[in-house]
Length: 94
Length: 489
Image 1: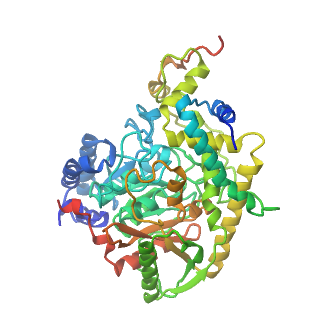
Image 2 (image 1 turned 60 degrees about the vertical axis):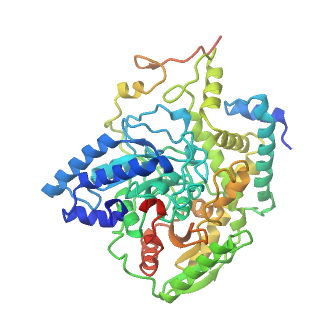
C-alpha cells in the first residue's frame, strides 16, 4: 500500500501537485494501478534479457557538418516569455 | 454517390482523370464538415483557407502534369499530435493550447510534397493517452454510427472524420492500439506499421519505443496509398529504419491462397463480447474459403501484455513529458514566486487527470528502489511476448484476432474506472510491444448496428502482406461499403 505521503513525494519528483480533494481519490487509483501491474511479479524472468526497443537499433552517425536549422526568432516567438534570444523565468534562487 | 462518400482511391482516380478538380473536392468536404461537425466534433482546428489554397495549387500540378502522385489534390486530416508549421498543434492538451510549431513533422512534409490538401487537425485523447477520446481537453468526439458512443482512441477524431465523410483519409498514431481500435469502432481501416517504418520526427512523443504513425481510411487501398507516401528512412529520426519499401499496390491483388493464418487461442477468452467473437470467427472462415490455411497458434504471455504496457508506456511518458515546463513553448501558469512553483503550477494546471496519473505511475516505476521490480521486469516480460510472436511466425505467415474485445461503448461508461478503460486495448497492445505491423479491417456489425473489426498482425516490415490479405477479405465482404446514417442525412 502506497501512502499519501509517498504519493506527495512522487508528485514532487514529477513536478506536479494535487489539491487535498484530489489526493484521496488519486491515492486510491494509484494503488489500484500498482496492484494491476503487480501481476508481473509472478512471471519467471530469470536470465531473460530486457527489451528496450523491439527493433534492433544502432546509433546512427552522420558527418559533423552544419546544415539548415530552425530560425531562432521563430523558435523564440512561441515561448511564453522571451527577451531577445533568452527565455525569461521566475527567480531560481530566492 | 456524392463526392464526400467516395473512397480516397476513387477520389484520386477522378482527380487523375480530371473529372473533378481538387477545389471541387475540397469544397465538397468542407461543406460536409460544415454540416456534420457540430454533431461529431472530430476536429480541433480547421484550416479552411489554406486547404483551398493547397487545392488550387494541386489543380495546377494536375493540369501541368507536374509531380503528380495519387494523393495530389486529395483532402486529408492530420491528428493533432503531428507538428504543422504555423498551425496550432495541441496534442489534445491545455498545456499546448497556443503552440504553433516552427516546423512540419516529416510525414506532414511528405504528404504536402505529394500534393495532398490538409483540412485540419483532428481531436484526440490528451497526449494520445486514452481509448475513448474522452481525455481530450477540447471536448468529446462522437461516434458517427451512434452519437451516444465513443469513437475509440486515441486517434478518435481521425477515425470519426473518415467514417463521417469529413476527409478521405487521416493520419493517426498508435502506441497501444490508437489507430486500430478507433478504426475498428468506427467501421474503417487503420494500419500501424512496423516500429521504425514511419518517421517520428515532429510527432509529439508519448512512449518512444512504442509510438508509430500510420493512416486511417475507408478501404485498404486508401491506407496503402497514404502509407506509401509516409514510409521511408528519415535521418531526423534515429529509430527510422533504412530498409527498402515495396510498392504496396503492385501485388495487392495477390490474394491469400496457401498462406498460413495463425489464430491465437489466447485472444478468444472470457470477457470477449460474443458478437465480436462470432464476427471474427466468421471472418476466419472467409479467409479459409479464400484458400488460406488456418493454424492454431499460442501466444502464452498475452495476458501480461496490458500490465507490461502500463509500466513501459507511462515510464517513457514521464520522461518525454518532462519537457512541458512552461519555459520554451505552450502554456505557463502566471503568478509563481519561483521557478519550482512555476513548473509545478504549469504542469498541474496544464495536464489533465489521465496524463497526470500516467506521469505519476511512470515516475514511480523509474524511481530509485523500484526500477528493477517494475521497469526492468516489464522489459523482460516484453522480451517473452516478442519471443511468443517469433515462435508463432515460424508456423504461420500472419495472425488474426479481434481488434477490440467489444464494440464502441457509451460515452462516460468507463471514464471513471481507469483499469476498465485500459482493458479495451488488450488485443492491440502486444503488437506495439513486439514492434509488429497490425491492421484493422471492418468485419461486421453487432445487432445495434455498431461496427466490429478484424485485426491482422504480420512479421516485422511485412505491411505488404497485411494489405494483400486485408484487401482480399475486403473484396468478398461489403462491411467497408456501409456508411453511418448521419452520412445520408
